[in-house]
Amino acid sequence: MARKPGENRPFNIMIVGQSGRLQYEALLFVASLRQNSPQFRGRMIVVEPQAGPKWAKDPTMSADVKNALLELGAEIAPFETVHFGDSYPYGNKIEGLAAMPAGEPFVFFDTDTLILGDIDAVPFDFDKPAASMKREGTWPEEELYWPGYTAVWKSLYDKFGLEFESTLDLSQPDEYWQRYMYFNAGWFFGADPAAFGARFLEYALAVRDDRPDELAIQSIDPWLDQIVLPLVIHRFGGGRPAPYLDGLDGDMTCHYRLLPLFYARESDAAVATMEAVAAPNKIKKHLKQYDAYKRMIYQGRGQKVRAMFDRDDLPRKEQQIRNQIKSAGFWVR
Image (cartoon, rainbow, N blue to C red; front, side, top):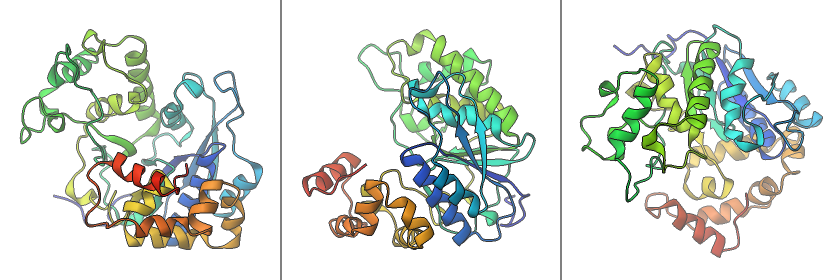
């Protein structure tokens, strides 16, 4: 039986803060949390990769943005990049788990996310980890001489001694991508970030450095985190998210990715939240330093993009949306 909202125990939130766009996304994330979930009981932790040989440039956030995050009640937790860095920046969400308080439930969000409601009311079951289903069939890719979806996925479960059959969605046809457990790594949660992160790192490095033969012609960049995440979640007794988590990627959170796409396709509530949390001068003075925010939010290009599309009748493919925005001269990253 699903627990009622609010019955879950306190948990910590993790995002990654890094120089460039991610530090401004982090500021928006934390501002949206404070506006829409002011009674949040856990710790808001921004993990930050530190300079080192895996980075060509210093990845740390600017002092001004760090201070703004601290003023909003966030904590900044540094971590050392040992295995990934420039070669695979998505590895930050794997290595950064080591900076989180061990033994305390956590929810990870990609930094390009807004909190739209009371996140404390989401009835997470931390003993059954899950992750975002807001994904497309991006991996594995169908190839002329490949062994098929079942062979590819089963080889990964076999590599780590994991049972495979129970992960299948038998309501979906055999050899159709949705039959196999595959997540967007935009959010995931678990009971212990230390244990979860250690296993995530172990599996990611093993696949990167010694992939099964069935993956020989598959690209694992940039998909490595999403290839491994289902294995980690299954290892800790989890699976696809239960219906009571539907508010994630819904009316509770919005994973918006790039601002032009955000304005084109996300809800009125998400756009209202974005513009409200970006309005105060203490936030605005930082966001205006990044061209995409200056143009899309403060110079009104976002609303022009929004007027180009009917949210009830969007183009079927994301690339079509991108092309229309680019043709109008409104594309920014």
